[in-house]
Image 1 (cartoon, one colour):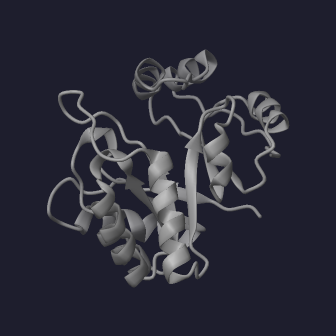
Image 2 (image 1 turned 180 degrees about the vertical axis):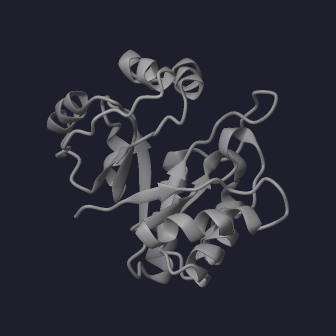
Length: 218
């Protein structure tokens, strides 16, 4: 099943207006909205709270639960809250290092185990938990997840080779980044481990050219 999942930018101030403007544009054409949480180690409005806005725009949310920011009690609290709100899809992430480079809280495997324990207790009701993966070997515990969100890649051949090498049986979602400028593409290549924007793309962006799209089959 083919889905278009769009990640929005969560507010870093106590207002929903920025996310409402984004949702008005992207919600009508997306299969689901990925709601990040405390991305790049900066506090943002709770992903569960933003999911209410996603529902209000007629879209389905997939909320991130960040292992870095939760202890075991916090995990259960947020699963209770999300389930009460009708949220059914989760992306479990480790999280970038917070300011000062410190990390605390749970691990992603422990989040996944807590999710399974929670659904065993209260019933699954269609709830799914996804995890992330780079284009390398998939850790054994990740095979217990319901789906994989892949790190962004700019090589179709690399994606095909990776897909042929893994036995993961659930849905797999390819990560896509659209660089708005040559400067942004260069920054991604420099700052995001494993992400390399092709030089010809960067050169075309510098010339303000439109690249031809290629048909993609995954």
